[in-house]
Image 1 (cartoon, rainbow, N blue to C red):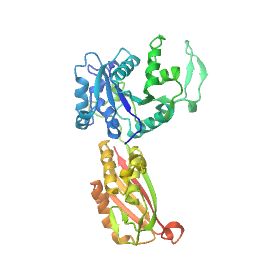
Image 2: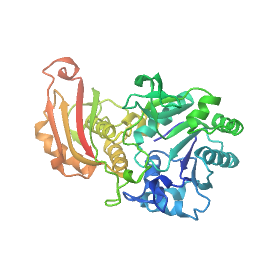
Image 3: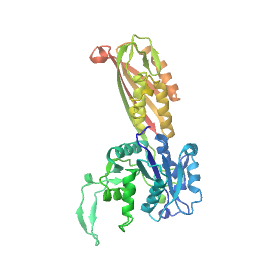
Image 4: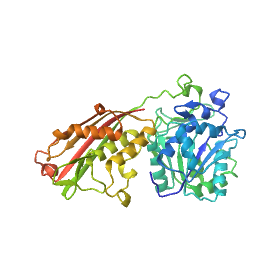
Length: 397
């Protein structure tokens, strides 16, 4: 995924993990294909390459953070081409982040945006990351947040309620937190002298710079804090996720273009008018898969204004997206599609189209079904001027 800003990423892992009640750092515990720390980093590297990656570590880390990251083979290979540095943290989160910001400043790379993410949040989704980045670029600062489930109150020192708060005006913030780099660095420098300990960077930004935009967080994006948050038996979090996705696309049919559906070329005198090859079926499937995984949409992956996607093969576009989704841990349960097309008749091509989609996804054909309807000679489809597709999918993780 391409963003029009240079982005630095800070992964905080300098804490002592004392609340876990363990003899080792929680970020280095096994999880999925690697460790908690590698799982926290992985979704970021699946959607963009940071200009610089900083991992804050304890004073006596002795290379353990690098070892924890390289436990995941994807991370091990990817960070070979990344500007990565391990920076000693401080006694507080605030001081650790400041050390990282100072290190970035000393590197003379001058990133425009910095993302700060907890090394103990291994279940952040690419969709949350993308929304945080987009809104940081638009507003200067952004953070994912969730409305509290319980009604919130403010109490005094004697435990009497003093203020009744409205939940609709409250949010529980998560990470990553995104900011423009220079203003955040200056705000941190000012915060050093005010003798106040800030619990996160949005508070520092709010004190010295301005407002922070809140985007939709994800309830699965938990921070591992206590031993109950981590299961030693299966070395994974007790989270099983099933998600649906919906994709839709509509293309005009014009002479001089090939009619392509699901990677299969139909013998017809009209074809889809589009920036790529116009395969409306694969476009809808791609959007359904991206929606279910929370990893964006086809337009953000392959912006139509970029010349390199002109007449692009939609099979290759789908495979690029699907490989990223599988790397994020998702599996396909089933895919169901409806094509609305007046001519040509679809039924005789159905098995060929299903097998073509299955081959593109490297999935069994019995997970995929495609059916077709006509426009009953109504609207643009019924008049033979367009083809329309709906696609739904079910993913598991």
